[in-house]
Image (cartoon, rainbow, N blue to C red):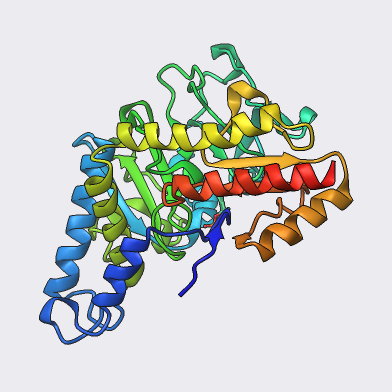
Length: 361
Ligand code: PMP
């Protein structure tokens, strides 16, 4: 068996021990004589899985008791609609910070439902930084302020939250989920598509403050109504059982391997530093993001030539470093180094880059 180092932005590499465990349990989950893919979502076995997944999520993220943890479908993109439908319910206004494609898509979707403005944007410099904001950048009566915490395509991350005062802050944390601690109490809602750091595709986790629930618009589809989903303990309809099971195994892995999200963060910092240090000292490869806003998860980089970029991607792929091509809107390269990418994967990538630089300078 030979596994590649997979730098995909999502779906992404999963911990090998999780894959092995899922493989070992695939024919007969805990004496049930079935796999989790086949069993009823109302079974005792699945009930234990989803409850344990929620317990671990609460423990790792230190989720306060007045927040619900929901396991839903539709990916992060469905939440672009669900958020205005559930929360743009006072003034009908919402303020978005545009830090990349995903924030922009959420913003454009929300515009269908109300008075939605861009409070700040980093489009002027191709989203290579996080715009600084002041309290007065946000409208006093905005129902919420929306951010995309880690920008998967551009490789930026918020190190400090925008000063929104007591306004409800909503964050898409899809590409940095469970990679570092978050003070959940600072947010009204955080949500993440699972297919980067948490599980295969098919699951989105929404952590929402309870007092914000119950005011969805009448036109809100039942599947997007967070109150209905919360009241049904995420079992309003058939949930993505297999994906929730893998999510539970990944949470077990974080807990056993690292113990806490503080330790997970330290590990991710050490790993990312290997790549950023190399980029900072290379004569051929350059990072594209301002140093203070660099993501620990997604690292875009370029050479000065399209031809060299293409040659690098081809040769890296042949050497077993796959999915390094940058997003189609940016070009160049991007290494996504989520929780499950081992340090060794980044060390070997950097060795390969150094060798490539030597041979092609
Ligand atoms: N938000 C972010 C930050 C993302 O990176 C992505 C997907 N790459 C999305 C939203 C959209 O996710 P989905 O495909 O689950 O709708």
